[in-house]
Image (cartoon, rainbow, N blue to C red; front, top):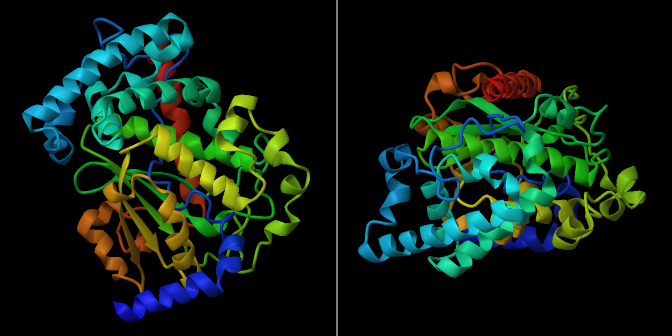
Length: 397
């Protein structure tokens, strides 16, 4: 252990430039704990909305039944009182949002599927300070309004966001796995080397990445079994991507020749002045990474519980030591490095502790479907679109 710590300190000192070159390709890598599966609604109404008063939607029983770890933190009478106090404050805030600040709150699945689970997550993230929790809830509601999050739930959104023709520079390399862990919780899957640092548009990539975060959060809330997980393969692919990410070949992709950064896209292509003020100018891969982590920290707490990095190299390990410090929720997230080499923490086969063989991709030691290059992304896009269309039919009925 002492030898490894010494090695890691040396990596951080000697490879900082390499880490910065890696960061654009690895953007969202540490934080993409919240990626997911589409559950869509139309703007005509939210089919997931609870009955009863819109200012106090009914909680989901499944969260209490199936997520004992999440509920355990609220077993004491003091914690129960804090939660009850936050529920009262949320009811008042919900009415105020509906009255003008964010009228779509009554149709927003993030605020309607599992209200008690949502409030518990924000209270934990705020270290059981109800004033801070309600402040964060309001900030999230306003951010969702400004980011136009509900646009993610329409038919066609997934295809548009992943496509180079309709969202140039999206360079997506992760999506819903369409499978689950042994406890029935969803997980996302990614292959980092499909991300092309030479072609990544900072805001277009972030827009597509948050799409996956958002729909993962919805799926986690629906399941009510606790946080999901994320498996990111850092290893060689040896073939170019043709679904979204355009890298994949065994060569270096140089951010320095990225035309979007050179043209000032980090500032001029921001979706709004408010968003630019909140996240700053995204002028390089590290800035995009920090923006992604900021969004996760502020607006998606408690969505991911485990993150597995597969087949990583020492440069990525060193990068992780840096950007993991920005993750406010890291105390509630387990990070593991798995692979064949001795300096990695555990062998790849440890994935089977958490995932049944038929729920794990073949390339990762399971008996499930193959990743097959970036075909797993195409399957996820198809599922996103099918479920969006189905939910629009439900809403229109």
